[in-house]
Amino acid sequence: MTGVVAGRERGETRIADRVVAAIASRAAEENADTREVDRTVLGVPVGGTHPARVDVSVHGDIVTARVEVAVAYPQPVREVTRRVRERVRDEVESMTGLTVHNIDIDVAALDRPVPEQRAEHTPVEVH
Image (cartoon, rainbow, N blue to C red; front, top):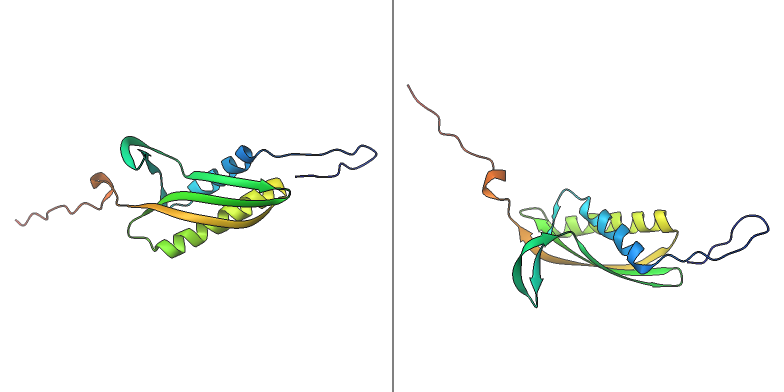
């Protein structure tokens, strides 16, 4: 990104792609209906998870991004991805001054809650 400094001094500010990616990743993770993505190597699960995977490309003042998230089941995928896209766009634009042109969202998984997160049905004792 190129910006002008007030006063007599003029300079150039460049924001590295990895910084923009970190901002986008953090924004994608802040949605309550997204989850961490399982780690894989060549499509084979290797155990563990990682935050939203983000690839960005910055050309001048224009950003394009690809975000990979898992969506909490049974949340509506279209609605969750819309919110993620809006949040990523808002955060990147407000923190960097760059313009986000396109954000592709890849849903890597529908993540069911683990058993201890599910609502437990406790049996009712009848006396």
